[in-house]
Length: 97
Image (cartoon, rainbow, N blue to C red; front, side, top):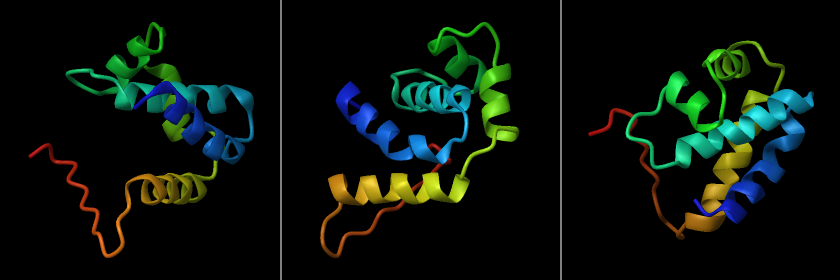
């Protein structure tokens, strides 16, 4: 994902986070997800963002106050707008196969 695209996605979801710290960490999290990392887990995503432990990423996902459904909808809308085709179907397979 080109940085401009990452910025546009983050701009779209930023209002779903009540505080600036989780908002910034969410950007780093998404940046790590689209990075060319061999493995993507709490440690590697934290290291990619310059953190020394996965605590902040885990806090974002477990305890931060944000609109999860709103972020999902925003990301879905972004994907449909940029990758969608009339009559197309998106299949997500998180198993890695």
